[in-house]
Amino acid sequence: MHLVASERIKLFSITTPWVCGVFTVAALVFPAAITALTASESHLPPTVASTQFGYQLALVAVLVLAALAVTGEYHSGTIHGTFQAVPRRTPVLLAKAALVAGYAFLLGEAGAFSAWLVARILAPDADLALDSAADWRIVAGTGPVFALAAVCGVAVGLLLRHTAGAVALVVGYPLMAENLVQLIPRAGQAIHRWLPLNTVTKFLSGTGEANAGRDGGNATVLSDSPLSPGWALAYFAAFAAVLLAAAITTVRRRDA
Image (cartoon, rainbow, N blue to C red; front, side):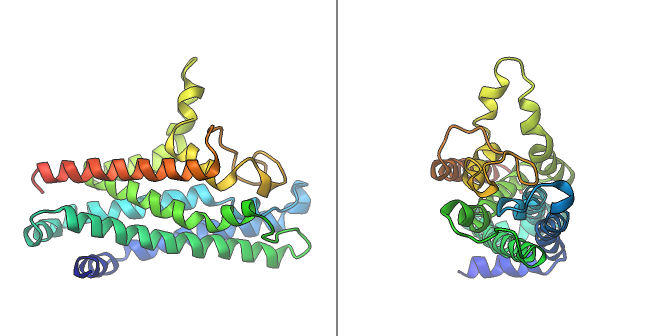
C-alpha cells in the first residue's frame, strides 16, 4: 500500500490529473445538457444513451491523463528515483496503473451519473429512468471502461516515454484510427469488429436498447462486434492486461 500512497502523492501534486479530471466530467455533462435542451429541435427524444453522448471525448481525456501520468515522470526525471527505490520496477508500475485506473473509474462514474442527472433535470418529461439492465450498463459501465482505458494509457506512456508521441497516439487512435481501418479493402470490416474500443462499445451500448433501438442519432454509434456485452468487457480487460504486461516487460529490460 505504501507504493500506492507514494504514487498518489506524485500524481496529485501536479495539475494534470485535476485538469483532465474536470475536462472528463465536463465532456460528459455538457453534451448531455445540450442534447436534452435541443431534443425538440432535432426531433430526437432524449434517451438514457443520449445522456452519454460525450463518452468518446471523455474517454480521450482519460487516455491523455493516464499517458501523462507516466510521461510526465520521464520528462521530469522522477522516474529514475522511483526505479532506484524499487529496483524490480514491476510493483511500482502496477501500483501506478492501479491508482490511475481507480481515479479514472471515479471520474467515469461521477461524469456518467452527473450527465444523466443533468439530462433528467433539463428534460423532465423524457423517459430517462434507469429501468433496465441496458440502461444501467450504459451509465454505470462507464467507470469500469474508463478504468481499463486508463490501464491502456499507462501502458502507452511506458512504451513511448515521450509526451508528444504518447498524446498523439491516445488522441488519434480513438478519434480516427479504428474508423479508418474500415476503409481497408475486403478485410477492413472484419478487422474493425475486433478492435478494442469498438468492442468495448458493445458492452456499453449493446444493441441499442438504451437508445430506443436507434443506431447513432444523438447517442454513440453502435458497435459491430460479434461479442455479447459481458464478453466484450472481458475482451477489453484482456487487451488492457496484455498491453500493460508488454509495457512492464519492456521497461524492465531497458534503462529508465
